Length: 168
Picture 1: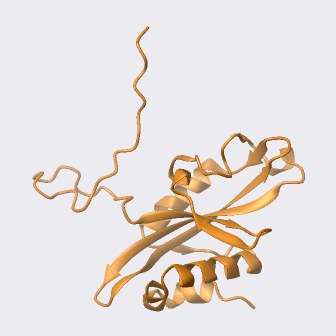
Picture 2: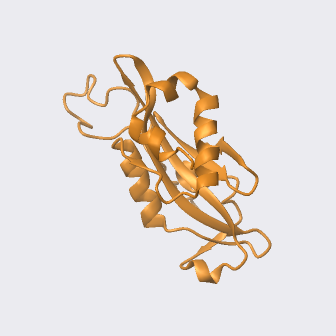
C-alpha cells in the first residue's frame, strides 16, 4: 500500500519575484513571523514555531471543541502572531495579533476559533496591531517578552503597539 504524501506549507523565502518573472507576486511570506504563546497563569511567554501548524506544545494531544462552554475549568493561553519588518532605522515589531485559546489538560479538550486564528495571523502579516482582547496581566507578560527578546525592535515599534500593551 502506497503512503499518501503529506501536504505542507510552501514558505516563500526572501523576494518571491526574484528570478521568477512574476511568479508568486503578491504572496505573503511567513519568514518573519513567529507565534508566541502567552501563559497568563504561569506569567510566561515563549516562541513555539509548532503553532504555525497548530502543533504547539500546549496544543498537542488536545481535541478542540466548538464552544468555550464545552471545556470547563480551562486554562487561558494567548497565541500571538508577531511579524517583524524593517524600516529605515532597522527591524521592529510590525504586526502583533493575539487570539484566545483555552485548554483543560485533564480532559484533553480545548477551545479555539480556527477562523479567528487564521484571520489574526493574516492581520499580523499585514502589519496590524490587535491586542485589545487581552487582559492586563497577559498584555504585561507579552510586553516584557517583546522587550527582553529585543529591546531595539521594541524601541522602533509603533506607538499603537506600545500603547496597546501598556498596562493600567
